[in-house]
Image 1 (cartoon, helix red, strand yellow):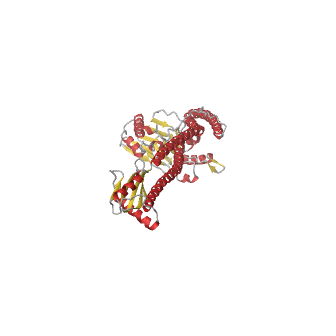
Image 2 (cartoon, helix red, strand yellow):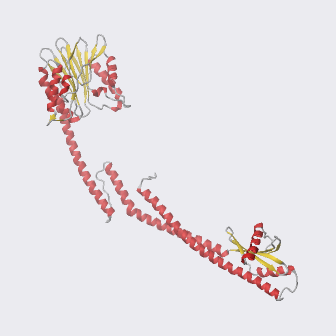
Image 3 (cartoon, helix red, strand yellow):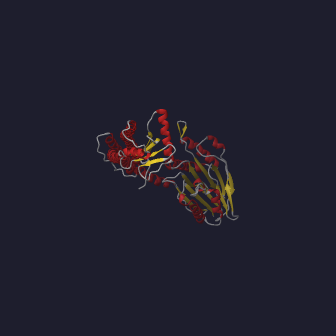
Length: 511
């Protein structure tokens, strides 16, 4: 199971575990320190009694020697035997005795295997010095590993002279009680651990589990299960939180259902709007003078790209390509507005620039309310081809149309000046008409920026270079073949990325 360090359960467990360890440690240390002090003091008391008994016995020997009640034989060995015998009677178990002089000469050992170390000699000299200068009769050391206390007692032995008695007394009671203390501490630790474990389980059930349940239900709602509800039956704040959560979930479910209904209604309306918009696009069919091919793909259900064809007086034909700013329904509504303006005004103007100026004024009037512009505009390019195949055109901020000279296999941009339509009256001075004569086999390519700005999955644009390269490979192809080739190259370029804007291509082939 993966450990989630950000989980509140893990955080609370770690925090409680830390507090439990601190609590158990402090409590154990307090008990240990208290009991170890009692055991030590008790052991010291008993050992002090024994050493006082040894000293009293030695003093008795000296007193009896002075009264000549013992030691009538002036014999060194007899004195040592008498003194050691008295002390031996008071030794217990592994207690031991060594009698030695300040120069390290051993006079007696209670056990054959006992050894007198250099440190023992130094401690004996220290004991003598302490007695001479401080009056202390005993100098002691403690071996903490073996729990043995060594007592160094200076003693002037009759006949023998200055000696040092080394008594090694094992703290049996201390060791036994220390083992008992360790057992008691282990029992206490186990008891405290069980107590904390039970308390942690109760705490988890009372607080952590309800919070986790709320979290799980919130995740279910986020995954789309709007029927998920928290089942927390408590009378405290957590229970109230569960009630509030369920109430919130009910409200969210109700609002989402309402939004879904509104979305479905909007989708239905967009389907209708898409169908209506399709009615404004002309049915382009080949005629005696021109062949046509059209590719049009909207980003959504409706489009901001618009193209139109209109028959003019005489044998002339007008072609309009428009790209409205933005996407969706606002852009689609503007295309309908453009169609209405174009259909009414195009037959009245023989100069493309004049028609664009008129459309600029009308668009500004229609897209302005109470002197506030709605922020919508469009680019456009308008072409007129008369009965003598003279092409006149005006570009209003749109992408340059491309002219394919099939006989010479050249690709020429149709360049004029001008800005977008519907922004400012100052644009009127920029619009200009240019003309060029067409020949049989020439083709005109109109397109919107959704074609050249289409990007590959790596973010590279198809660009003018990609469009021109695709056209140059097929200058001799007819309209349908050329259009299919361009769209194939475009599809290969964008791959799975898809189009990010409305895209339109309109091809005109002069017969």
